Image (cartoon, rainbow, N blue to C red; front, side, top):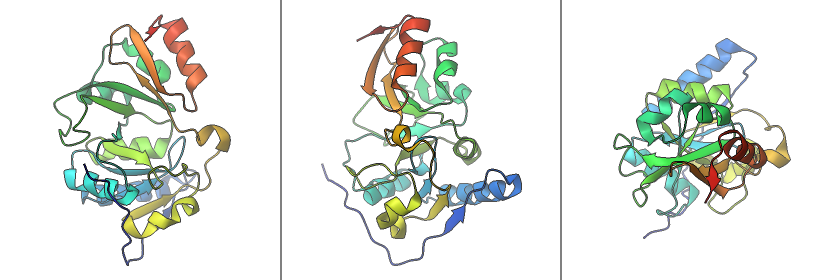
Length: 232
């Protein structure tokens, strides 16, 4: 097993400011980001929690590049991001009521499911599971919808370093990235820095919290009290 080491490339990285209050400008930024992703690039994006690195999940070369940039070990899986809850069953096997997913998502929650065969088999090849996100962030959802397949999504920081809430916090990665979307300083820093809550829903009628994250209390309340799932 190899541990990918961060690369430093001698180039100027393109940085685009994202202003969701200006729909025309935001659309131009979204289209540029889609173009870079579809050409095999790795980009930095704001989400509803922390800044992330995104690549096309079905593009193995792009996934490898993303691991290289983070210095992430091959065996550590990354989540995928889709634009809508309705997209989830194409990539992960859903064994919970559809209403449960809609209660959790969009939001700061990663649901872990058995993967479908349609998902790139070289993405997280050491596990039969996949984490799926539908962030509560218009830009990243539009990006996932427009890209044509799920985005592989991981936090924008060197492996084992703290998560980032502004692009300046991962400046060491800039030279290796193909595009950076600057959404400003992300709000609610204490909760956001905790990243998403990761919950395993791969066993029918049960749940397991893998990472408490920023939406822990709300997630457990929905699973345990509203849908009567048992913790395992």
